[in-house]
Length: 118
Figure 1 (cartoon, rainbow, N blue to C red):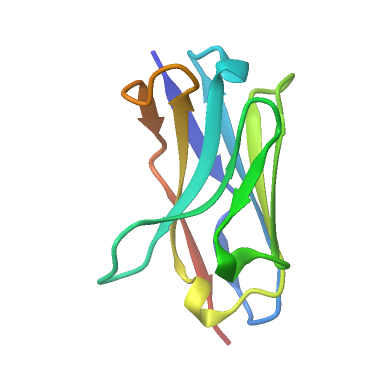
Figure 2 (tube, helix red, strand yellow; figure 1 turned 180 degrees about the horizontal axis):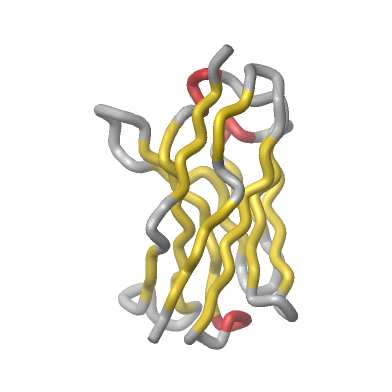
C-alpha cells in the first residue's frame, strides 16, 4: 500500500518560514520524481517544486529565491523549505510521486494546509 504523508503545515505570519515534509512508503523511493503542488481556494492546482531521483530541481518562478526542495532517499522523505512566505502562498500543499519510467504511475498525499496571514 502506497502512502504519502505530508506534515509541517500551519499558520505563519508574512515573512515567516515553514518546512513541509512528505514521508513515502510502499514505493521504491529513488525510482520516483517527487513534487510539491499547491491549490488555493478557487484556483487550479499548480506545481511548486519538483526534484528528480538524481536531484535535478525545478521551481515555479514565484518560488525561486524563497523555496527549496530536497530529498533524503535514506528516509524516503522529500522536503519543501519555504522562506519569506507571502499571503498568496496560502494553499493546500500536496506531495506527489511520479515513477521515472512511467508518468501513469503516480501517487498523491492528502495535503497539508499552509496559511500565511497576520
